Image (cartoon, rainbow, N blue to C red):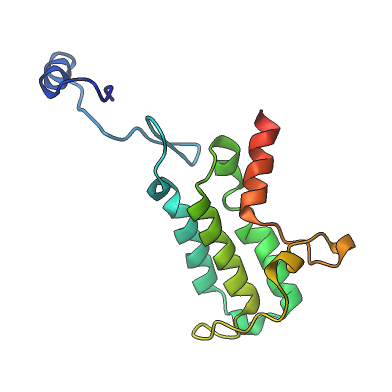
Length: 149
């Protein structure tokens, strides 16, 4: 990779001398995308896609609400944890992850969105305060970053 300030001709000369191809992306390391500069939200879109793919493979109508809570806690909330420990996720991505969690919890079938009977903020409270102990992605993201700092 080259700096943004590097001229195209200089990139070509260096690539030719060392016989190394020029790449705009470094790739992934330990499941986290490597990037140069500020990350774009599209870089983390695979987390949302993976969550939605898991959601599509499960038959939500076959689980009770308690079973759905366990699925969210054990699978969907744990997917982005490693990435959150490395990078701050954009707000758009954390909102999309929370939307996936809400849809799994409330919907009755794949086509029905379901009717929320209780505010999501109440559900995300600890069990000692009357919630179900689910965690919002933005709060987890902040906690992971505070742990590093």
